[in-house]
Length: 218
Image (tube, rainbow, N blue to C red):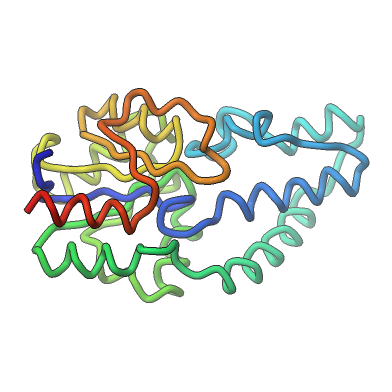
């Protein structure tokens, strides 16, 4: 394995375990309305947001009701933020970021989520200064599996695709990296463990194990 000169991180499910908490917020809302939503049903949202499949529209189709989505979203958001304040960074994330910084490896974040969400959490967690750039869907980029977010991050780092490494947890994300021509390591989590990662260069069990692999490549 070539040692990367730049690392491009997805945010949700890679740096913070947001995907599980976001999914649980929908599980609770569906349960309140006497409905269920499985991980398999929700899976198109992973790595892509709600552009490919909308759980709000799906709930309305199941119940035949219309909801005040501004109020529902605000309630879900308050619950999400309280839960995530307790979660913190994914295990091994800070150690990997510190090691990469010490090695002079440039880093960026590319996410299908909004800038308010991603940049806000990076600031809250005290790691925003680690990254050369942050690229999100609300910056005008199409969501994954389109390659645009990763290509923008690659250009920001000033490196060739071959000299970068994408860290992803979702099928949509690994496909986006493949479409961008950038090698990708997949780190599945409890939301994505059944996903297709055939387009990833390899898989790791955690950010801890990824750092160990990268250390050995030096």
